Image (tube, rainbow over all chains, first blue to last red; front, side):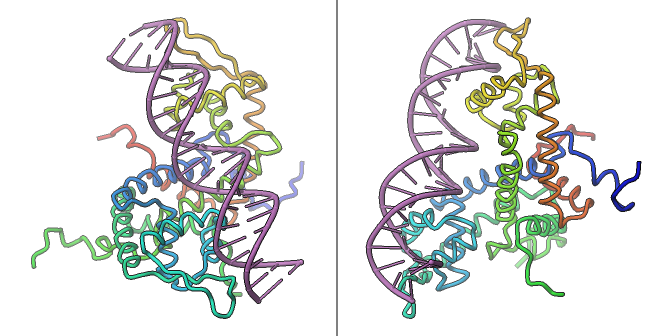
Length: 160
Length: 160
DNA sequence: TATTGTTATACTCTATAACTATA
DNA sequence: TATAGTTATAGAGTATAACAATA
């Protein structure tokens, strides 16, 4: 029988995965759960979790960002950021300022305390990641991050 | 001041991560969520989800496995497998057989239909993974799986 | 008509505690 | 006492629908 596919398509590329352990998605989930548990433990002394940390970091890294922009960047629903922002605001980590040109938008600016706390949280998370990744070389860590980003990130600015 | 650390420890190894995008855990979560959404969509026509698929695959790959053993292998709680097994059992994908030597244990054996369905589900998931990983070479896919497994898996049998 | 921030609500996934039967 | 299977329940995290204010 004649193949419709080009010769360079190997059998391996056509093969159906046959075991759970062969699934990259399975290892992705296991590794992510493993990380999340360690990250939660690492952030407990700071009385926060990974999502509020990501939200505060978004504000610190991009002062003046809006909540809708944070949601788009982090891939979360607008409805779900409300309680997280309320919590961070109550702890005095940022201030809201209505945009002068568009009164629908609240621009979020980190306070001094928010910047300090974000740095502290990053320190806790850094220690956790060093622990989690202790079996990987720095080159392997960089390669892992590159491959993961390639999976979920939209194609960056085309350079053709 | 004198350092307590060996000279080969570079500054990079000591550095605190400063941005969300630098966190491997962040990319792990984003990639895992991306995968889970695609996997859920891929399995929808088969009317199942990732966890029931993993459970059925565990039974097909190791006939006679118990539910407690599945839970330990997949890192899930015994309480949470009950409804999943009930669902798979109702669809006729496996049979329970009380262990003759220890009547606490139910040994689970895949039915013919269960084996066929597991193969079908693997086919759907394979297509999803091929799609998800289309930007990675086969070498990169294998490297990614190796690095992910190194993160969450306990140290294998020592070969010293 | 579309977007922002918001409320209310539901659903999935996971975690804990307690029970029974067996060992 | 320890484990297997089970029930009930509670907590995260996430999803949808709808609303008022604004563009």
